[in-house]
Length: 115
Image (cartoon, rainbow, N blue to C red; front, side):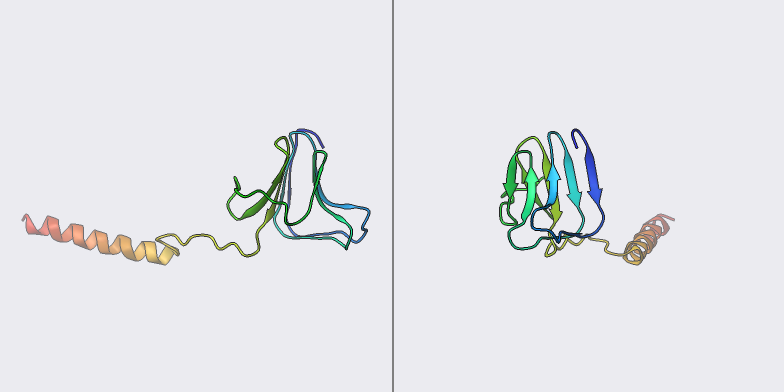
């Protein structure tokens, strides 16, 4: 497809070696939220006129946690199964609520000192 964006929620499994795991044409973007499995001799990804193997991803990515395959005009992103997102300061809602209560009581203590 031309000038389109497609998101695949899951894995792509190709059983025919003559088929392609994922393909993007001019100005298209494809995001695969899983893995691509192809048989021996099959084409992993085709971007524009270039066929790419699983190891042909770009050194840098514009989407954290994804392998990027591009020819400059179209892009395919495939989720990196080993990616671990960075932990935020407040990893849960309860940690943030607890910190808010601490700050509230500290602030109340400072206000109480002035009276």
